[in-house]
Image: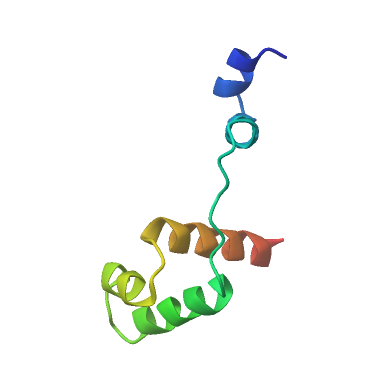
Length: 77
């Protein structure tokens, strides 16, 4: 497969990871991500906003939503 085709197909995420690895980019790991995301979820359940909860815990909203979606998908399986 050509790199252009992969860039726009269903394997785009994997392709982007491969490019980043080749360029020496490494994703930062979040320590205790599960615990932090659970803490955010608890704050939301108590009525606090998502943005404020994420900011206080130190996790981006995008990371929180990605984590939540992955947990929901795992529970459906």
